[in-house]
Length: 268
Image (tube, rainbow, N blue to C red; front, top):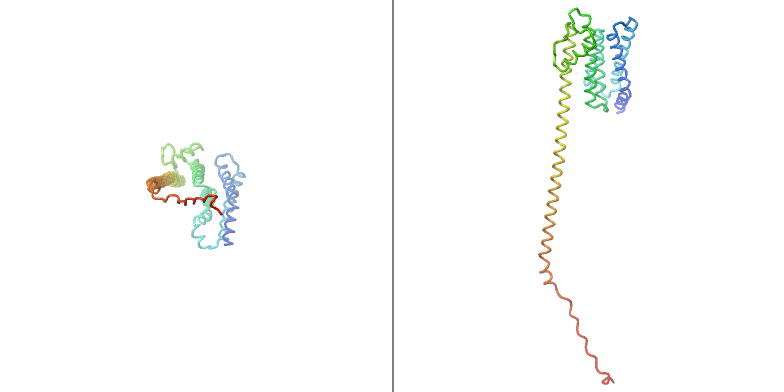
């Protein structure tokens, strides 16, 4: 129990700092892509920041594993975290660091009790939209046959891809860009499913609440009606029994007449 409470305290204390680091990672990832005139020093600094944020999430995972009461259960239930930690080590690509950081941020946000489902979904949509645009722009900008050349084109493409509209005016031409498109489509479908299920669950819960209130009101009215009927029956019974009870009741007790007093001259 002490180890488990220590794990919970660690997760609660590191929740906000890790989210701040995720924002720092987003800025470091976006700057070299949006600012094409960035020099080698700026690009190198952004890369170090990205690796530093990933290392912070990796340390967080290791600490949570050490503090876990049952480490095997933790590994089995947090396999996605482990995959996200090991993913950038397979091939040091910026895209893999992006994917792993998004996964780790998502898993840590799920454990926060104060983060509701709607907020999590909205944040996921915005994150995927922005990072998907930056990722496809970084791999399609230099493609000879590519038509995604600016951030506006990338944002429009990401929005139409996530909503599965696919106008076809912009499309990736490289293999990595198409891989990003597949991931964005799958993520968009999943998030739309979560939003739809959340809305449906809200309506069902609302209808069930109304039904419960209606049943309670009906039961209260039925109980009140039964009580009124019983009260009326008692009043009618008392009225019907009133005259007969009065005639059968014994009269007042008869008092003996006073004996006449003898005359005064007869005394003596």
